Image (cartoon, rainbow, N blue to C red; front, side):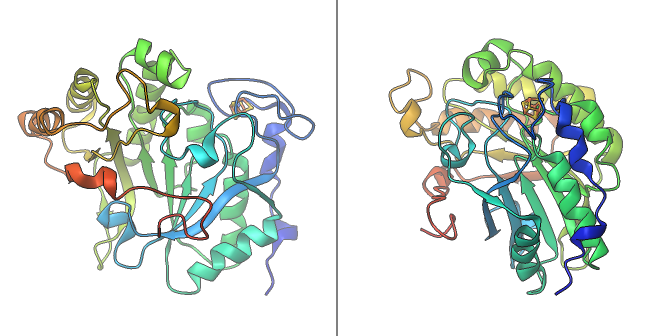
Length: 315
Ligand code: SF4
């Protein structure tokens, strides 16, 4: 197979002085991985796999080919993907050659999976753009999903116009003390508000579906409800309806489960309860947010990825 790698524009130059994300580290990732995310210039990937557990318009029946980048530019103490996302120390990752990344992705595209997601891509945007551009040179044009924590810079997001079809941002906090304590980013609320506004500018609230009911363009905002922090969730929904649009598709997530790191944490050491979740669901109705999906409260038992497995979502 001709992988066409030689002709690809070198987007990686952007990380010779890395200011990809709001951490603004300025480090040369070809010679150092001392930036906040602990990432170098390689294709550091924890898994390329078929995933059927996303929203129905994303996964469909056949699933999405997800590329899970390793490490992260946030440091959420409760990270549900902690095996692959911690900034420092060992994580499950492979440093792959571009050809191998393409080989693994095209394996799924050739099977008829026409949607490709990049998970935690904010600190690997040049690698992601190179992958997409090379796939296009090879004649593949899957729908591209940018599955982000929303701690993204506006310049980086603007550079994604023409690359990304569907934005799938988390909206984690509107409380800067929470974001500082839980994710090491006191400015997360301001950054995420600006980032999601930029995504909304690019895509609006309309979700375009194909004949099979799969999303082809648009944005979906995810929010994970945390135990003891219902007010944060209510404020986020209120903000979306008030400042953006009540027509935006919202994916409300109940799947929070304490990881070993926070098993004994005073607030985070338990799953959410029914009352907490129903309060947040009621807010959706009160605000007239009708587009989107609501997880079942039992979801915490279903979402237990193990990235030590070849397919992390089958265990
Ligand atoms: S991507 Fe990593 S190195 Fe670059 S600015 Fe963000 S945290 Fe720093």
